[in-house]
Image (cartoon, rainbow, N blue to C red; front, side, top):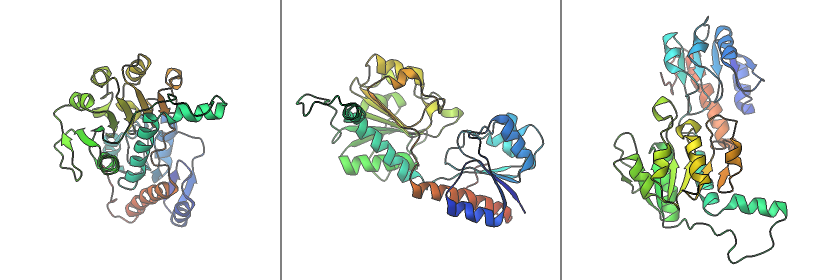
Amino acid sequence: MLKLLITRPIAQPVLDQAESLFDVTIHSGGNMTVAQAAAALAEYDAILPTLGDAFTADAFAGDIRCKMIGNFGVGYNHIDVEAAARVGIAVSNTPDVLTDATADIALTLLLATARRAGEGERMVRSGAWGGFDVKGLLGTHVTGKTLGVIGMGRIGQAIAARCHCGFNMDVVFHNRSPKVTDVPATQLGSLHEVMSAADFVVVATPGGAGTTKLIDAAAFAAMKPSGIFINISRGEVVDEVALIDVLESRQIAGAGLDVYEKEPHVPDRLKALESCVLLPHLGSATAETRQAMGQMALDNIIAFSEGREPPQKVN
């Protein structure tokens, strides 16, 4: 029977199916180190990992038994897919199933930051709220403003649809290649043009070497002083120090973040900023979405075990 390692507890129905088909082990020690990943590759036929598990090039340098990695998540920048391919390991991911949940989190952050909901919630809980105040916690109107989307893939387009149809927002975007969208949207010539035109900038690019620190100090400098920045992609897409600098100096109005450069570490300087709404990577965190992600990851491993091409293979 094929030996399968699952690196986090997943939805019980998916786990039950996995255990009916494979010899399953659940890793219980949190994020896998490079050494743990290397040991797993030598011991198991297939692995179902997720973000934070360090399947770097070094992990693939030793003895290899594994032939299939079915990643739990659409992003797979924690896996060196080229190194995996060199040793004959297929890698798959879970696209599509988390699009709506992640787009919803982008809107959660956009609205919460614009309306200073984090500050207000902390005020109520601390007992500091003294009642209705005509000038208290004045935020930014959302309806009718301009949304700038960085990365107009499935998630970017879902965010654009919510903002255009729900809030009558104009949409501009930056994408690495020309893109035709279902929602009325204008592709501008450069990243900085989008950053300067938008009232709200939402980053929805994939992670990886091609987008590391894509949003840097120069990009932030292009934003309006009233601009609000939202990141639901990957933490390393943003120069976190540059973001903190512009927030501390009030060069932009605020930020809403679901991801961080060195998760789970969040800099103290960032946590100290009242103008930030900070979430603990909740993009796909609905029961329905997480079960669907686990099912898709397992389905790819099942396909491999049956000699079929994994449907969501990325390498």
